Length: 236
Ligand SMILES: N[C@@H](CCC(=O)N[C@@H](CS)C(=O)NCC(=O)O)C(=O)O
Image (cartoon, rainbow, N blue to C red; front, side, top):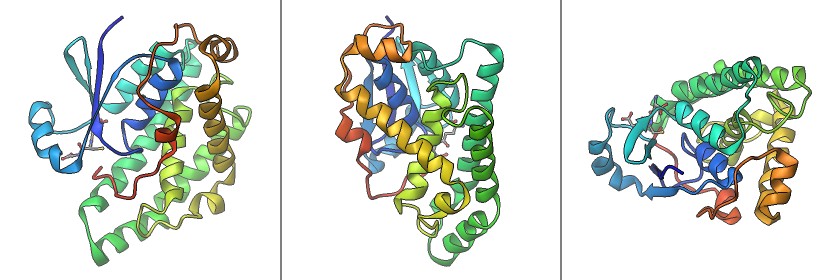
């Protein structure tokens, strides 16, 4: 099996967290290289676009979080084989990614500028994409976004909704999701339960239930870590 090294900030959110969760759920061994924010200046020098996350696969460096997430999903049995279901999965991932891109510049702002930028999103594009996600979920059975089972799309939305609810994002009301798209909060709980179940369930039983094909190997993410929410913000 390939040797994997995932590099990203040491916090439980952002663009690498769904990848960590997918690998964790699938029992795929990987080096979880986390670094503190002040170390980023040095880390970025070794990346092609001065950005993270990056994944090294047998030493070959790969960028772009959704490409990495799809790869992790394939390894973990969390990405649809069916082309149409894969399309639905990709669509959801891209919508969440685009929302993150819109939010990104506000991390480099402070004070009034940040308040204005985020308030504009809260009153503009955020409810639109949250309501769309909710309608997608409902249109495809109400439990998962694609393939009638947990996929990487669910993990991407899970991390996003958890961040919006967390209070870590100044000027984003913690009840925004509940007001605009409450079904996403129920979905978040469902995914959280899956992660909890995974943390206490022997690998063979877990694979039988979730159709995993790979043998469980050790993982360096603990359940406690998965659910810890760090206080500082991501510089996405
Ligand atoms: N298109 C890239 C975007 C990566 C990205 O913007 N990463 C952020 C952290 S979450 C970053 O490194 N920002 C620093 C910068 O752009 O200068 C991806 O999908 O991975």
